[in-house]
Length: 461
Image (cartoon, rainbow, N blue to C red; front, side, top):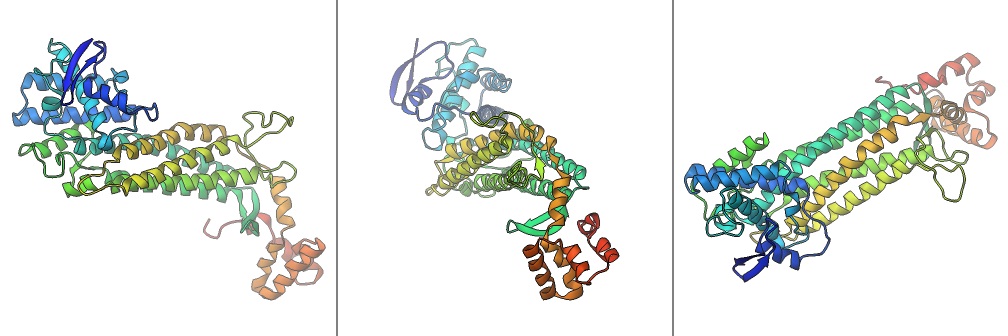
């Protein structure tokens, strides 16, 4: 054991851990979830500490041997080492002070070991005075949050493009399958099944575009504002240097917050990004529910397509198969929407010079990103790629569709076509046959007008 001291007094710390007294206090105080920071957040924070140390050395405030040791310690964390040394619960002290100090202590004790000193020798290298030099939790936590979210967002955008491509390719495969369109869940004019899937691909790409736009907003960073936006305890040039270092280390083009006071008060950029994930989730729910509906049956539903059977659907009913991959996507997206609601509540809870609820916002957004990144490949491979259409079933629905009378309204008027539709429903006689029977069309005209492929083709295809 070793003794460490902070402003509240002394505490014994196990000598085999890299964190220190303030982390230990947080572990005792905050045990709400048992969940700790995601690796992206740990890496982002280590990147911020490294960039700050480099800037402070360049300015001349940080001794080179200490600065190099801090940079080396950060590099070890960025290599994926010491990840078990960040035990602070994601629901913690407001603003993220507990986690900031957790990182400061781990980096500090690593730097002490690198320089041949003992862990806890904070007179030589201090977690507050050296690792946290020119910084505050109030500017480092939102800065790290932006970086972590952007890293994970890049993974999601790649997965969304894969999903959009699969939907688009499935659309090409199904473009020769004519089917009834439906509006208000009621029969409408014919389309191609390929049109539906092409539209799903477009919707996914549009949602991805909104995420990309909101991600660009995160390039504006709060770092350099220190505690309240004034930049107190920072030297001239530090803000510019730390931004340049972060841009170099992450291969991004970051900029300083246009208004550093607003950057600490408001979490609007993170809220907007979370909203883009909600928008994506709502589109994915719509698509998943369409697939469930089109797959419904096999004898009492639409059964126009079949989703791949990936597991038995019932513990009681033999042979039953359920659309489980689409169901799971719904549940994932419900959680994303719930995370966005919590994020919105946290965003409006900022008061005066600081929003202290950033930790829960960061956790929720990263969780949503992780859920989508993990599940979308399975949904794409085990559901979308294996979808098959029942062309015969689709054609049988078109033949009986009374809304085909719409194609006669231009020639005979809306009211006359409506009467034909009602008679078709009442007698069960298909519209083409009824039109010939009433001598509105010749057999040849009816065959041409009601050709399945031509009447389901989009005018702009």
